[in-house]
Amino acid sequence: MIKTAVIQEPPVYLDLEKSLERAVELIARAAADGHGLVVFPEAWLPGYPTFVWRLSPGADMGKTDALYARLLANAVDRGKGGLAPVQEAARAHGVVVVMGYQEVDSTRTASTLFNSCAIIDADGRIANTHRKLMPTNPERMVWGFGDGTGLRVVDTAVGRIGALICWENYMPLARFALYAQNIDIYVAPTWDSGETWLATMQHIARESGCWVIGCATAMEAADIPPDVPFRDRLFPDAAEWINPGDAVIYKPFGGVLAGPMRREKGVLSATLDISAVRAARRKFDVAGHYARPDVLKLVVNRAPQAPVQFEG
Image 1 (cartoon, one colour):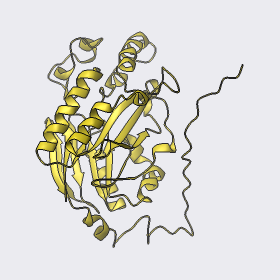
Image 2 (cartoon, one colour; image 1 turned 120 degrees about the vertical axis):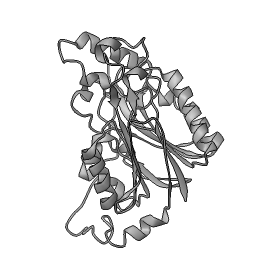
Image 3 (spheres, helix red, strand yellow; image 1 turned 180 degrees about the horizontal axis):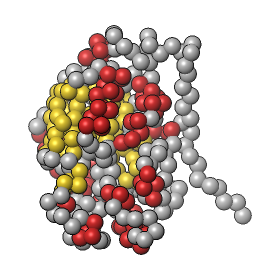
C-alpha cells in the first residue's frame, strides 16, 4: 500500500532557487505525513510559462523575449546537478518524487528549453527523465521537441512508474509505449484542467488498468511575484484563478479514488494498492491478451536526439 501525495501548491514563479526550497519543504512535509510517493505538476520548476497563452505573436514579441530570458535563467540544468536538492530530499526522507521541470541542457545548447519530468527514486537516484515530445500550440515558442529516450517505465521503491506530460496523454502510441512496459502508476503532470481533462484521465485508467494521477499547478494571479516582467499586464485581476488545479487519482480500470481538488491549494492524499493493477487487467489487458501483436505493432525510437555536429 502506497500513500501518495499529489502537490497542488504553486512554486515561487520564475524563481528556481526559491522554488527548489519550497519543493524540499513540501517533500519533507509529505514524508512526515507518511507519504511514500510525492508528485508535482508539469513545469513546476520554476513555473509553467502561462504567459505564452496571454501574449500576442509579433506585437508582444519583446515581452515574450524578456519573460523567456527570465525563464531560461531559472531553468534546471540537470547535467550540472540542478535537481540535486530534490534528489537529496527524496533520499533523506526515503520517498519517490515525480517532478515536472523546465530544463536547459548545456551539453547541447545554452538557449533551448525542454519541458521535462523526472522520476527520482527513494535513494535519490534519477530513475528516468522524459522530455515532452510535442509542445502544444504557443508552447512551441518556449520549448524544443523531446525524443523517445525517456519513454520508459521504471522500477522504484513504490512500484513501476511512467509519465507523460499534458497533451502527450492524447497521443495513443505514446500511451501504449508505457502500457507495454507493465506500468503500475501512470503520472500525467499537466497545465490542463476541467471536465475534458478529467474524462481523459478516467479513460486512461480504464485503458491502462493502472493507477492514474493527474496534477496541475493550482495558482492565483496573487501568487505571481511583483518582480515578474509585465505582471500587471498579464494578470490584472489579483483574484483570478490562473489554474484551478484539479488534482485527481483514478483507480485501475476507472473510478475516482481521490479528487478532483479544484481551486484549492494543498496536497491531495490517497493510498494506492499496487496489487489492484494485476486484478484489473484480468478483464482488459491492453498490452497483454487484448494486444493482438499478430495484427498491430508499435516501434519506438529511443535514440537520443543528437545536436548538430560542427566540422571545420
